[in-house]
Image (cartoon, rainbow, N blue to C red; front, side, top):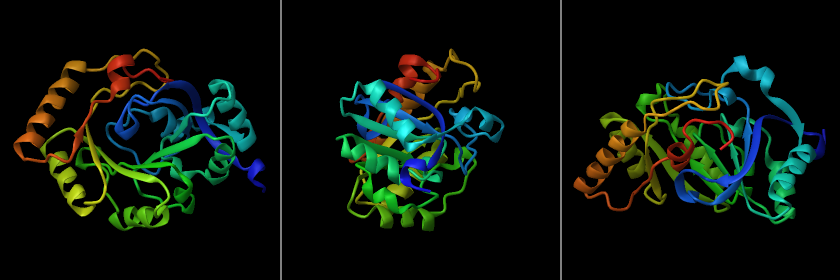
Length: 244
């Protein structure tokens, strides 16, 4: 199968809108959200791209078809394309990245670091987001290290961790100490994941902001002055709606 014939399971393609979190927060972006994940986090807010019962809603698309939609949405004006999921590392995305780079587009990918791929080296930005204890998942640090090895010096790499409570905060401190060369971004967790077919699900903004203030107090009290503490801006603006 050639690169043009590669089939990628797509949950949704949307934008341009802003990136709502992490190192690229506020940057105009087109999102390519793939279907499928090897995790099932307790607070997952993208179940429509994760749970197997929604597999029938994922559309197998060729690289050419995906790229036609990205360029249509962006008016063929190069910008950053965010590869997300689910876990986009499940898919074969190297050919898509190569195709987009030829047109001057940039690519960012976020993954929990459970699956290492050689095409990570071709990314412009790699956001590694290991899941803390509140997720109910266990981090395989050997797999995480393999992601870093394969990415090499290609992309800009950052560490992003969702924090709900003291255990998550301790986990973030441990992860940051393990990877001292990586910039660290923390964000307060969102306790209100949307029903997968709902476009208007509300969020507990007050709860999110309370956790944000608590998190700011923790990092400043601990003298953790290298970390970035940011909200999920898209959640505050649009709640849990899909496609924003």
